[in-house]
Image 1 (cartoon, helix red, strand yellow):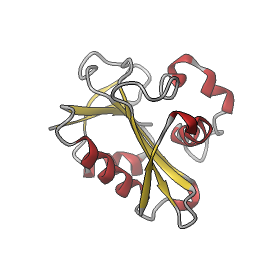
Image 2: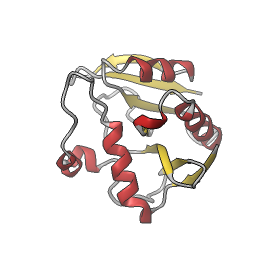
Image 3: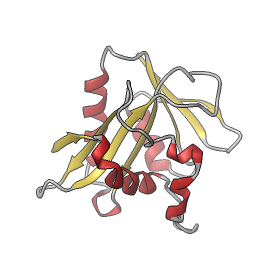
Image 4: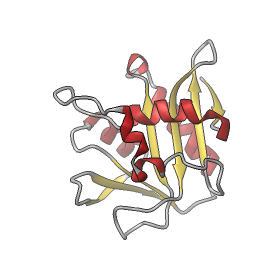
Length: 156
């Protein structure tokens, strides 16, 4: 699988995939794209390219992005592990279940090896597939945020 880094000029693609990252169960409506204008969501992509920002697109055979993984230092819902960058990940629905997310995670972890003490994330409580993926890569749940979303962390 091929990857390329997310750059500031990729804002539209980044936002498209981060909207996918705002996963909803099948029995709930998808998020309106206007959600991307909320301050706590904009924090994932606004002014991309700051120190510590790292994002990768997974590319299909035509070099089109089919998934994204990124980390960024941003505010946290929890006090514990707030000093770690937060991970966001998404794979287009048509490419799920094909190992894309695992390959993205491997590539990201390889690139950050030795450069940060840990990575944190929040995950929808009904997104069991994502929770299993994160656990496979050493993430553990350390808290349930007020939002009800499990907060997970992976440390060195």
